[in-house]
Length: 187
Image (cartoon, rainbow, N blue to C red; front, top):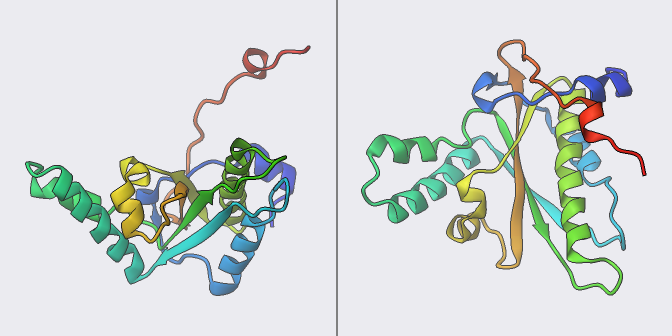
């Protein structure tokens, strides 16, 4: 297990196309989800839930995405439809983090949505700490109501993100990060 500070300083996303199996074991997945649920949550509302896509479920979800894409883009070439069908098939595990808000006199919807985002980041960090590659993605389909309905989301739910998790196939290069001098001010 890496040192927590070093992990946070060096964590980086791994592209799903640069992942393979194995993915997390059932016990590791439970750990990842437990950590995903351990986030700031003003009012203890738990304004998020998780959808697990592994095995054939990744292809079934891709079928939903491809069907909606083909219907909305009738002139799209077959290879584009096939690309959409494979959206969740690179990594052995994809976790969908579903966000929803509840009316609350002290907890605005924005705070509840931020809690869902914190959950996504905890999932990414937990998977990385366990030695897996992880990547938080969305894409057009994460905002398409027909796809969301096809994936089983309720009308008042959104997809905060899809976290792809697997074993990296090559060393991951870091990307440029902002200089603190450019993003930090003091009041």
